[in-house]
Structure formats: C-alpha cells, structure tokens
Length: 269
Length: 202
Image (cartoon, rainbow over all chains, first blue to last red; front, top):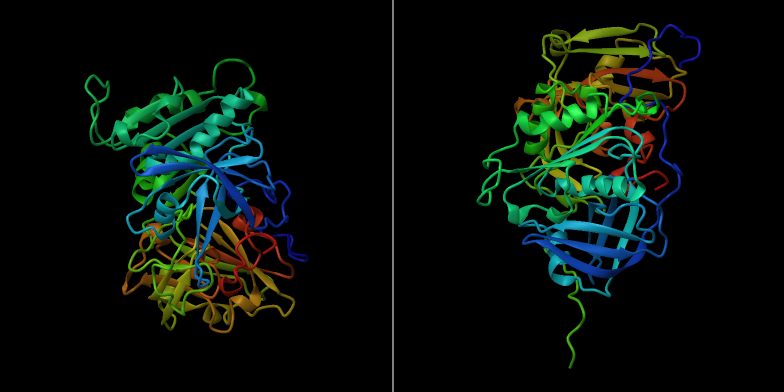
C-alpha cells in the first residue's frame, strides 16, 4: 500500500476493502418531501409516510436526515431509519419515537399533518445495511426494530431466499412496533409485562431467546445447497446503548463471532 | 378564520455559539456510537504502533505512553449524528510527542488510524499534527471506559468524532489518502463540523 515499503502488514478492515456504497460519491441533496400519511404505531411512536420528488432506492437499514427550520433561522436535524422496503418506490416511511426532551421528535408528533412538506436528505449509511444476499439475524430493542423491519419487509417483498430471523424486544405488547407483521421468523421478548397466556414470562432478552434464531441463521441454513453462494451470515443489533451492549454479550454467549456483528445504537438525547 | 394546517417549528433551546451548524447540545450525556461489537482490551495488552513513511517505526505500550509528558485537553466534541458535547476534557499525550520519536518522512501527507476492532479512519497528516490530536485514556478525570474507546482512543476534536478512533492500535503514514471505514461507507473524507462535512460530497 505504501510505495517502497512492501513489507508492511495490511491494515485491518471491518468489511471488504474499498467497498463503496452504490452511486458512491453522489451527493444527496436536501429535498422537500410531502407527508402523505401519518400512522400511529404505539403511544409514543408514529410512522410518517413521505413522497419524495427525487427517490433513490435505499438499502434496508439506511436512514434519512430530517431538518426543521424555525422562522428565525434556527434549525435542527435528526437521523431516522427507514422502515419501508425499497420496493415501495417513490416513498419512504420513517417511524419516529417521541422522546421526552426531543425537540425534533416532539415537533414531528405534534406539528406535522398530512399534506405538510418536510425537508429531508438521504438515504445514508453503507454499513448497517442488508442487501438480501447473506443470512441475517436481526436483534432489535424498542424502536431499534425500525431499520430491521425494513430488512424483514424487503425479504418478503423480494422473496429473498437466504435465512432471516428477527428477535425483537419491547417493554409490553402495547409498545411492540409492527406487531401484526411478525410471522414464524420472529421471536418477541416482552420485558416488563406480558398478556395473559403469553408463552414467555416477561423479562429481559436472554440467550435462550436468541439461540434458535442464531442456529437457523448461522447453522448452515436449510439444506438447500445454496450456502456456497451466500455471503457470510451477519447479526444486526439495533437499540439503546444498554440494549446493544446486552445483545452483544448474549450473542457472544451463543457463539456469534464479534466480527459478524454490526451495531447501531442510539444514545440518550 | 381557519387554523393553520400545521404548527410552525420554533426554537426550544438557546443556541450556544460553540455549536457548529446542525448540532445540538447533548448536555451531560455522552452517547455511545459504534459500528462494531465492543472489544475488550486490557491496558496491559494494549499497544500503539506508528509505521509507514517514518524512519523509525515503533510500538508503545500502556506504560510507554504514560511515561511521556501528559496533557489535558478541554473543549467541545461533535458527532456527525448531530450531538455535541460542550466543555468536556480528555487526558493523554499529544500525537506530536509520539511522531517526534519516529522521524516522519517528508513525503508523508496522510495517515490511517486503525483500531484493535478493525476500524479505520483516514486523516490528512496536517490534521493530526500541530497540537490538534492526542491519544487519550482519561475522560473528565476518570479512566476512559471501554464503550467510549478505552483503554486508549484517538482525540481529534476539530473534526467529527468518527475520526477519533476508539480502541486505537496504530497510525500508518502514507503519501496518499486512503479512505477509512466510514469514509468508504458514505461519509465525508475530512469531516469538518464547522463546514458541515457530514456525507460524501458535502
């Protein structure tokens, strides 16, 4: 890599060397999106469906930036993961959790109506993305499930053949996002309260919750002989810093190598 | 009289002049942002290597860097995800001190910092020399925690914080620019918060 010093060891990489995002280098410009639907998901979360004048197909896991500008010029920007799959052409859906002191999330929840314009930029991110070409284990806590549901929706819409499993943790059934969409590929862990008759007692995510999904994704798949053409299985962890740390620990416990784990955390504030 | 269809967005917080455009003050919080699983590196096995375009490549241990003249930096840090932490401090050693010991080749123009986790980030040499960059092991007087890059991370506070590699393991000096991890994944080559260089092409 350095001329005249051929004996240097290669630098480490987290991913394939010099892999750039599709259309790498292309600047994503700010644009005015139209809010075409607002859907309440839970008490604290709502999904904003945006129609984009310039739409780039996103990779499941990517995010958009939303910018709010006050009449006096003050502005605030936040990133939100896309929940919709790239098959939903021309649109993106952003699921936004209302944070106690969130100046942007509060405004989106209280101030934005169908028909409004919102300034957005995206899609961004080339790491916490799933291209549908490798077995995937998705582990989400709370609203951390948002980028993961884009992966699940993409897998279904595109008829992806590689194994995909989702493990989602929520405080209660009422706070579980996208509850109606989960099928056999999904394990739900309710941490605080569970409805009567719920098979799993409420409690934090445990290794037992993850083990079957890990086996399905890492265990060589379903004997269809397609394994040779697949990319390496990858675990995607998304949630609060505390959730991500716990999930990383549990994945290590059930034998997932650290190098197979990609993490997206959202901190306080 | 009809009600407006939507509320105007209004300023909730007084804007601190220390905040670059598009950033907000996270207050006393210190969010954790990493792309990879958090590695566990003992101070006793941590090391830092400088190689590439230098006359005398070398490796420092935890004890070696602590034997060098220490510095405490005070100021503001800015994450590309839009939080800034104002009035914080880190303690460690200036990269100037380390680079003085390896005799940098005048042909060197850029560096790649790399981590024990496999993370990399690229910087112009001029951004890590001249009292602009440090290796640090204390944050606000306490040992740097693993989640924040301990035992030792880089600190390059005038650029977005992804340039301040956590769990730093080495610096390679090059005669050309070579994109690091986020720089290959859609983010800006340099990342100056005051010019809002967040993404590729900004």
